[in-house]
Image 1 (cartoon, rainbow, N blue to C red):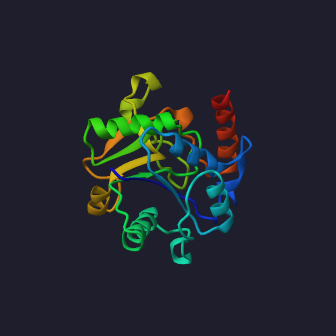
Image 2: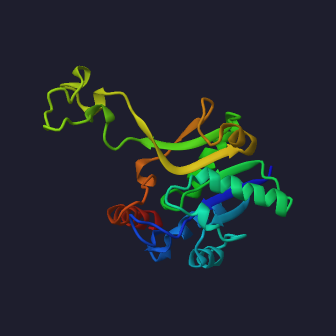
Length: 231
């Protein structure tokens, strides 16, 4: 089984400029994801896809490979990650003669995801003979306590009748995609144009390992939890 650990790391970031190489607990943010991939039980090629020479240099320094710099048309704000992945798969097959059987997509903005989290997802992937496994965590704020607001701010119909007077423990658990781990068979991904389909299986992670960095506040929270992991 030929496995590709794929880490997409674009140079541009509007929410938190330079976040992929911003130091978190004394290491560039992307280094935490590279290290988790390298430490996972299932071994594979750890590849970083980036349009930034600086990110590329830091990634190689921490043990990843960067076969080429991503072209500008695949490094836009709205470029789908799957387009970038499929572009790399095409390159590996046609330029290097490498065909990967399984893809593990790891976002660098999830630095609290550990090699143990990856191992658990892989065990589920194998045990269920799944086409794809995607990580989730329990929602921080229960979605049944949320709703749209009209322009006048009225909360007349804000809460559904079935949740009124109930506390969190009395409501069904809801889960959300946490963006930390995506594992899939290559043919499954090509067929479904992504990791999500009716046959995809969820791998549950803790909320503490599920922080996804998109802002300065997220970064501070991730650094706090990461410092606890290191201890």
